[in-house]
Structure formats: structure tokens, C-alpha cells
Length: 449
Ligand SMILES: [Zn+2]
Image (cartoon, rainbow, N blue to C red; front, side):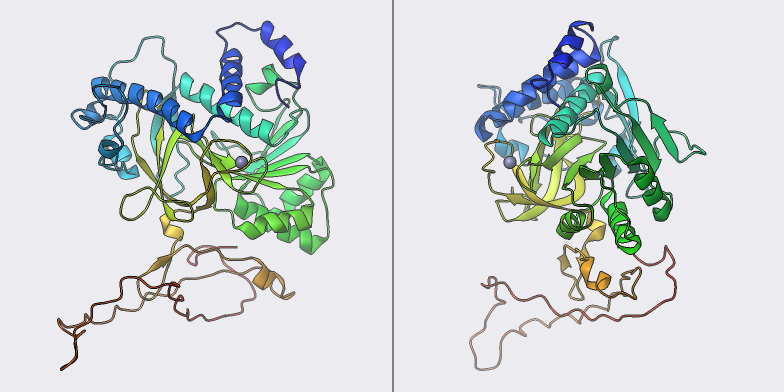
């Protein structure tokens, strides 16, 4: 499903206005097809151009940034000065919530089409955003790149099982006659079903078996429940070609389980309403390519410096087309491990793994935080276990502070605490308790599977 392999798509484009949305998206997608092969340096130059434009707009027209962006741009060559950029404070979700009105541009051309969006509020409270048509055209062109990378054929049937969009509906299934808008104006598109993720898993599986889609799009946690139900019931969905996941932390074993149970690959996507697509899976490997044309993505360690391959840090994003509501260095609350350059030939930076929000971190009794992933295999190997929950125990009180000078013993040389150990110290053993229940209740406990 690419323009190159689909001459009919070109033919259709001739019949739509050059100013139409479809034409804009096609042009951007054409450009993305070239830039993905650019070197990392050349991609940084492109980002620099887009970033300087955004900084200029924000300086002139966005009250929140008045006086905050001085000294970022080199007066001689007009590029962003990396050292100055690194001192720009991170923007938090709480700031967007409290200063939303001041973050909006006060000077927009009268013909600018604006789209108001609310985030899903995965951490509790939704954010209100304003975005332009340019932002969304770039978003859809990047989506087309995703579908092209993974050879998705829009002529086939897709079932999406996600939180419902828009006003509440009585019917948990919404049938669209053609594939995802606005691509159906360009490509031949098959039927598309939007299904509420809040429906029972047995019912979802029944629908999938009955509808026999080629593509499934859902969240990782819901896919895990579906795979478990498939195992339990022995049912299969032989029509399926590919599963796409988004909006949730993907444990690597879910890919294996998807292959084992459904016999199809899984493609994971990482994005946010505030930024559009941030990274998605390479066509050749399981790791993710940052969508650099759309977003400037930084992965920062605790010291605020960029992480190197193999290091994990917080994801900070600057959407490059957020002209009407610029978000510079927005701290999404997620974490990623940086990967080395990919040998597929694309210059787009690599994220080896993406971790969930900070609230999903495990806090050890010492107070140390560790990323937590909980394999599904431990309990699924026990036939009598249908479901399991993992509940955090209350944190024990911290040990009393060490009195000053306690490092030294009388008559011995004073030694400081070790600052570096190689290999790294083994994690402390975690105390755990297993309880068996006839039924599990949602809520109260941290439901992880
Ligand atoms: Zn790659």
C-alpha cells in the first residue's frame, strides 16, 4: 500500500484539488519517503530549521514564552545553540493545564484552520490542546509512513479495539464503510470497525472470529487478555495478518505470545495526542524509529544530559508543527532506552525500548526506582490460575540516618561511600507473598494483567 506500488492512488490525486487535504498529505508522505534515508546529521539540520521557525513564532506571539526563549538562536548562522537549548526548563503537563490559554498564539492568520483536542487523560486529568491543519496533515502523512513500512493493505478489514472516541454511544461497535479517513479518498479501502475496549474479552473474541479481520489494532493490555482467552478457548482468527498496538507499555514477551497464539507479527507504536507519532517500529526490527520530521525527541538522564545507546532516560518531546500552541521540551512522563543506529539504513534515531509512565515504576524498599515489566508466562504456565493481580505492599519506613562520621572506625582511615562498582550491584531480593482467590476484583490493587 504505497503510492509507488499503487498507480491508481496517483490517478485519484489528479482529480482532487491541489489545495485539498489529501494532496497535502500525499506531498508530505512523498517527502517522508525521502527523508527517512537521510543521515542523522542531515535530519538534525531539518529539525533545526523547523525548530528555529517555531521559536520565532513563540517569541513573537505566545505570552507564556515571552522572555523565556532569549539566546537560543545563534545570531550568525540562525541555528539553535545546543548548550542554550539544554538549559531551557522542561515543560510539564501541570503547566499546560494551568497556563493553557497563555500557551496559545495570539496572532493567527484568519484562514488558519484550528482543531481543539483533548488528551485521553491516561494519568487522570485530560489536557485541552489546539492544533492546526498543518499539524494533522503531518500526522496523517506519518501514519501513511507507518502503514507503508509494515505493508498494510487498506483494502482489507480492520478492527480497532480502543477507548471510544467522541460522545458515548449505546452500540459498542461502529462500522465505517471504508478505511481510515482521509486515506479512503486516495486508496481503495476496506471496512473498518471501531469497537469499545470496555467490552468483555469473550465478546471481543467472538466478534473477531465472526468478522474475520485482516488487521487488529488495540492496546497491549487488551491484547494480552485476548491472547489468554484465545489460549483458553482454543479458538483462532486465521484471517489475521498483523496486530498493531498503541497507548500502553509493551512487554517484549507479548510479541512472542502474539506470534505463538495468533501466528502474526505485532507492530507497536508510541505517540501522544500532544505530539502525534513519536516513534514506531522499524520494518526490519522490533525497536522503534523516532519520527524526527514531526518531533524533536530528547532522552535525558537524571543529570539532564542526553542518554547514549544502552542508557535509559525520560522522554522529552518538542512537536515541530505545534505552531498555535508550542510545547518546548515537554516532559511526557515516559522513559526509553536509546539504541544504536539501525542497519536498515534509516537515519532516524532508535529507541530500543519504551517504558511506561513514572507511576509504573517499581519502588524498591531502599527507595530506588526500577522499571517494571511483569512477564505473563510465570502464571500462565499454571493451569489453575485464570488471572492474576500484583499489588504493591506499603513502603516500609526508611532506615534512620547514619550519624556524621559513621564511615570511619577509630584508628582506621576514613573511607567514603563507593561511587562506582562494576559489575553493578545485584538488585536486592524482593519480599513477596502469594494469595489465592476464587475471583479477582478490579480497582484497589494495581491490575497488571
Ligand atoms: Zn531500522
